[in-house]
Length: 167
Ligand SMILES: [Zn+2]
Image (cartoon, rainbow, N blue to C red):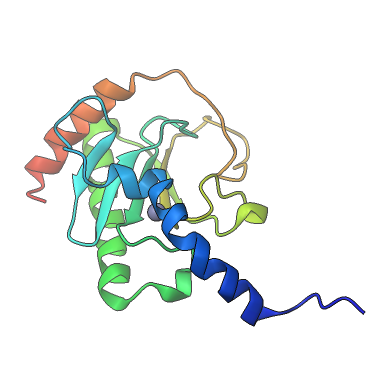
């Protein structure tokens, strides 16, 4: 009979691929970029996290808060990372309120491809501004819905808002 569950084996295999995964991970690569450069979508850099605009936003102002450490395991995040993620979600809400005046927000994470994660190897948290009439229902956040918006313009407005919030 075939063994379907052999965790020792997957750990063994993971030990070989972790370095390669890390160097091909877009979130690991982008965290060292300068937030003031308009070639990237970063809007905030923290000690344990960074915040960026989603290139494929569900809605205007869709931000993602990403821990700097490469992991896809929510349970592996430590208390410093968790508290900064929630502080940055609060800060993102404040900045988005200043810039876009939304009427509501969706907050959350898609963990695993089956749950709709677009980048499944590196956990990230979404904050999506909502307005009355923007949609009659909330599709899975990870689904790509390209909307017309000038990301560079939104970024520059958010940078001003973040600096006025002193973070
Ligand atoms: Zn990564």
